[in-house]
Image 1 (cartoon, rainbow, N blue to C red):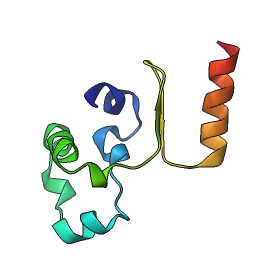
Image 2: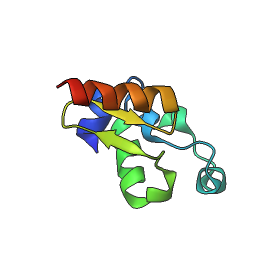
Image 3: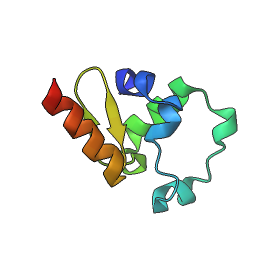
Image 4: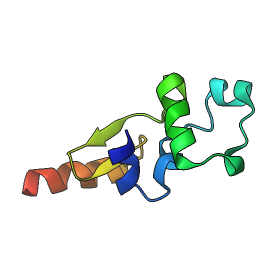
Length: 79
């Protein structure tokens, strides 16, 4: 997951679903958390992950924003 976070604008925070019920339950202080701590948390609490995560080994798109997903898929098709 760290490799994915490394290529995303916003790093590990881009993987976090702040609208999830579990996020609200945990009352997280994101400002106090490092990317490493956040990645550990995401590993323990997979319900906090934004989905879908599309990864080609070099680039990633996170979330269901249709234009971004379509652009990513088209870039894969072009090679």
